[in-house]
Length: 74
Image (tube, rainbow, N blue to C red):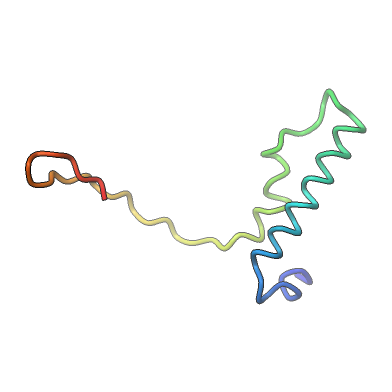
């Protein structure tokens, strides 16, 4: 929680800092045990996932047919 307060006005800087910590931790884990370390995805949530701003995902857009019969997905 201290980091959230410290970086309250600069979420990008917080994520860059945490990304550096993730990189250092992955490097140290690999040095200590190169054959049986966690996958990178396993480290993401503890280091970065908690700091991301969660938004409710928008529903998928349905493709429509544009004039001339082409498919318009936007």
